[in-house]
Length: 432
Image 1 (cartoon, helix red, strand yellow):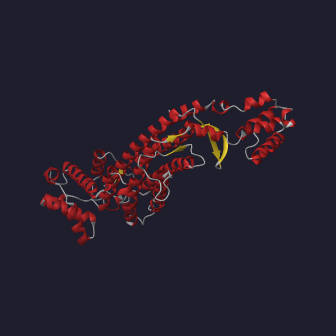
Image 2 (cartoon, rainbow, N blue to C red; image 1 turned 120 degrees about the horizontal axis):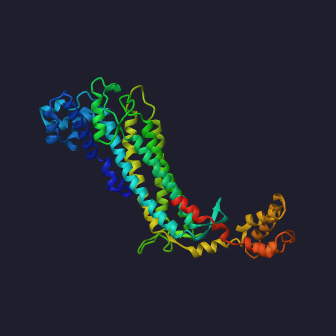
Image 3 (cartoon, rainbow, N blue to C red; image 1 turned 45 degrees about the vertical axis):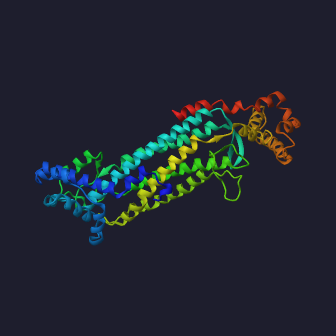
């Protein structure tokens, strides 16, 4: 995590203070249930609630000697609690605390990301509705294809992020599990009721079979979903970058008063925020493969996953959180140019209506092969004329075409309304 791409709300989830706070709550809840079961004195959880604390700097100091973070944590807690600390962590293993706390952190991160997605969805929906009828060219392979609307373009991205929200909700539920089952997960030294109590109090579910650790396929799915969301961020960011190109300029990032685009060229207005998001998406996706490789552990456990997760968890969540918030700002403040979109629609002299002409010819008893040949022949003339010949004029000069389609019929084909008649129903389906 670096400050440039970090929002404090997400960073705090992965700070040592929050992690150890969760650890202490797990240990306290365990003591509460153990006291209820008569395993430890009833006074212990009360003392933990009153005196239980830790010192992050002291934990770091102890860990430098003992080389074990949980032992260092328990030692620090003992310095606050006193003799009754001997009952803390009774029958538990380190992974009981670490994995359960990690689940809590990931659910906290997911909740924040879900809020981010809601804000982004709201911004996309607003723009999609506002530009539902704003005509623009659709492109395939970067080449003009057929007309669409800018609202429909944005509705497609809205639908993608709506799917992302559902995936993240499912990933959150999948990761919201705990394990307090002792060494190798057999509950030999800790009553299963302790785990159930902790799970209920912390909004988690007991892991089905925790072989001392929570199975890492759950975590792999969580980070895979983050990677997919990052890809959707990049998809929209790339669209904006293309639309901002000088030759296109149908939309662009907001350029504020006093902003500078280039140290060398004062005229530049660059899509720097969208480019930035493209790069950040690469980082989030790069963390998916290590999460998947963490699924394979030796027997009941090893800690090969630990160093990976200490890196990728904060970095992936912080980076995606930052990206979603930045993308929301871009969408909310996007500069949109309908007149330029209209100009671009007409740049090919009507070639974008070629499919309509071909289909009309097939309806006039011309084979599809011959229809395609007749339309393409005239389309190539228009391409090669470099703007001096319109597609309509080329078609009207072709006797083979006009034998089947008169001027009135051709003019009805060259109508943008043919391409927008279903837009409202598509947006309604997408934006519900």
